[in-house]
Each structure stands twice: as C-alpha cells, then as structure tokens.
Length: 364
Image (cartoon, rainbow, N blue to C red; front, side, top):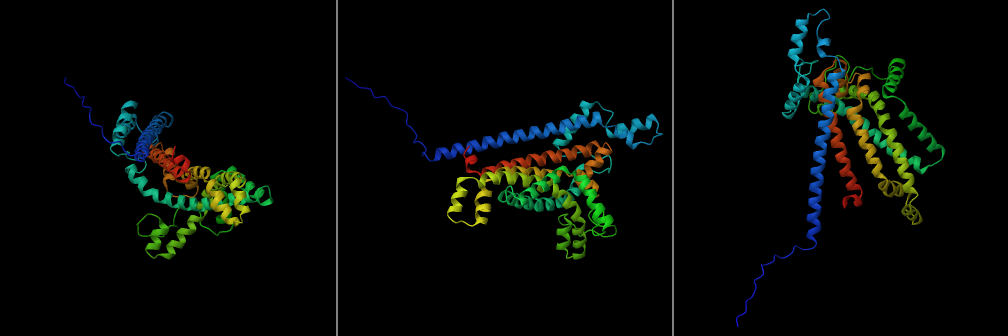
C-alpha cells in the first residue's frame, strides 16, 4: 500500500513584529504627502484660474490704459493684438497654462520685463521688511500673551487686552499714515515714505538683496544705519498686525494651561515661575500659537500690500498694487501665484510643526 505525501509550498518567515508598524507608518506618511501635494497643486490651480478670469472680466482692458485717448481704432486693435488680448478668452487661458507649465509668467505690461524677473528683484525688499516685523512681532506677542495670562483679570492684563483690541481695529494704512505724520512731518525724527534708501544714496553691493545684510558684509556702516532708519516705521506698522492676534491667542491658550493639574503639581513641587510659565505651560499651549504665527507669516509676506504702498517700499506688495491699478494681467497673476504657493508652503510647515510639537498627532 503506497502512501502519498502532499508537498506544501514553502512559507517565508514573517517579518518581525516590530518592523510592521514602521512599514505601515512609512506607507501612511507617503500617502499623506501624496494627498497633500495633490491638494496643494489643485488649490494653486484653482486660485490662479479664478484670478485669470476675474481679472479679465472685471478689470478694464490694458489697451485702454496704454493707448492715447485720441488713438484710432486701428492703433487700439494693433496694441490688443500685440498683447494677445484679441484672442478668445479660452485660448488666452490655455496659452497661459502652457506658459505657466514652462515656468514663464509672461511679460509685464508696465515694465516690459518678464514677471519672474520683476518678482525676483522686488522679493528681497518684502522679505527684509516682513522678516523684521515677524521676528519682533512674534517675540512681543508671545511675551505679552504670557504676561496677560499670568496677570489674569488684573490691571496689566486689561491694559494688554485693550492694546491688542486697538491694534486689531486700526487699519494698517491708517496707522502708517499716523506714524508718518507724527515722526516724519511733526517731529522730523524718521525718514518719509521714500523707500529703502534716500535719493542719491547708492545701495550696497548686492549679495542677498537685504540692504542691512549687504551693507554689513561690505562694511558700509553709514548705509547700514540709513537703511535701518528707513525700516523703522514700516516695521512698526506691520508689526502691529503681527503681534496683536498672537498675543490674544497666546493668552487664551496659556490661561487653560495654567489651570491644568500638571501646573499645580509643578508649583507644589517648588518649580520656579519662569520654568512653569515658559517651559511647561507655554509648551503645552503652543499649537494654536503656531497656527496664528502661520497667519502672521502669510500676512507679512503676501498681505502687506497697503503698508508697502504707504511707505513707497519697492516690494512685491507695491508691485501687485500697481498691477491692479494698471490692469497688468501678467504681473497680477504672478503675484497671485506667489501668494498661493506661499500660503500652501506655510500651512504645510504648520502641519509638520504640529506633529513635532504634539506626539499624539505624530501617531495619528
């Protein structure tokens, strides 16, 4: 009697149990990145598309602004043909998308230069102004928020809250005009709205495009001082829009953190106040503050259009305002693309910062 034995296929050894969560986590991270990247591209495309059609439907034709009032219809038609405005709107849109995919934002009607070159030449001025206002505003906002929470319902707390409400209520352009009237017109202590340097003063040799850094690298300390004085009023004006919401959010988050059991335990154990306030309470109250800082970054680098206009600051914001006034479609679209990419990058960085600040989000 013969017996048959069934041969089972060989089985591979299972992966160690501790390796499975790591692989699953890596796959989850990869999927999350892919989904967010696709969402970011869709958002940027949507913003640019809406701006493209609205600017051409609502704004007057650039040819109306470029040609003389007594120009003949033939001259007007020739200029519209040269600018590509005589083509159907859908064809203009497809040509715009094709150029955008090649990194070409078009040529500005105002300057006659490529929009990418205009933005690149003006971006350092915006970054210098915005960075200075952000650094000072974030530090002041967090410190005032912590102080207001520690001194809750006392005179100092009420004073800080009144200051932040007033700063939020004041329009930025109005505050800039008031500061100019006081410190330039009345007191003569600070320069007027003439940009980054006065007329006749040559800028430092370009390295970074930031006049403070470039003048320091070149050893031109006179230019450094003049440039710093021209920064004071724009930075103060922009800083009011930065620190006030950060102060309010920090205070609210810190009030909840200071009432938590771990803070009471730390006080009972004799920890010093500065360690309790800044090392423990502020660390656990930082998530809403991070979100507000992200909003402040976007405001400083993309939303300070009127501030740059008031002070004659030759940045991206003033470039966008001139583009709106002149119906310069390529320049306006370039600014909108810059703003959309900036917002997407900022809020992606916020998500990463959330995961670094809160281990619970890291594992979700």
